[in-house]
Length: 356
Image 1 (cartoon, helix red, strand yellow):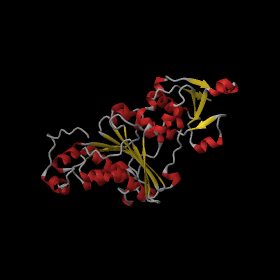
Image 2: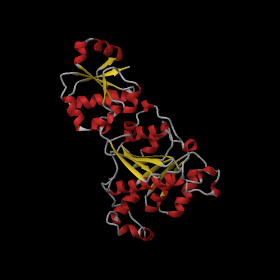
Image 3: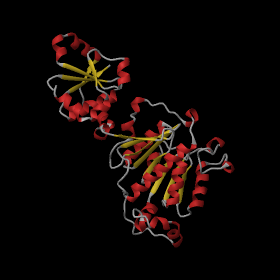
Image 4: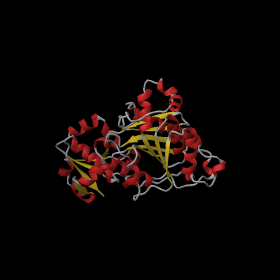
């Protein structure tokens, strides 16, 4: 819930009529409507996701909406970017969005930033707003949003789409999970922009409206929100998957990386240990990669316990049965090894990381 001090917030007569249906909703009422009017939301990206999100946020009475985007309207945008029409072609997206939103709700203040967000301007821009909506389609911008939301203690609402599938999560909420905890920079994700992969308009509309819904719930203090979860929607299969965060909610990768406080052995050292039968009996090598990765290549004598299995108490209990042995953790991506190392440490299980 954002700052609930609303004594100085007032509504005029026309606003009382405009939001009449809100006042009879138990979770909103007059106090809730004042909270909505006080809120400041930044939409990063005025495209397929950003358009429906800001449309419904303006309509519900958000007081301040910032829009950051440097693009102009192209005809290829019109199948999903619902704020624009053929009359807007070649015009600034932020200017067109402002005109449209003001025609829907003249009591919503629209602040336009007609340029890209970057390392030089992000701190100043993000510091002004309460919630930052990630409606972008590239990883570079997402990491900038992630870093400055973390640095400035701002809520980061993440969404992404590809074909018929979309993702949604509330990040950096009450100092909890971050985007870089789910997708660390070190894994070098490849961007799949809609221009390369294709997208259908209803997908961006669906996820944009869900973003708007989560924002409204946060502002109103409704506790039923999705922080600590990644929601994956598939409209083709009509399915929803909830992925709860266990590992990174305890261990921020950024904090782990900075601490640099873990035991490392080389793959060559481990191979020497394994050549000695006495040493071999006292060693357990845990490969934390997923099964399909393990099947392609694995170290001799290694057992496969995928990273997602460490959220299960039985896995930790199993390891505790062998605490007299030395555990060696292996993964081809170091960040996963570090996470498991810290989970072991948290549970008083002594271990080493194998560095290849």
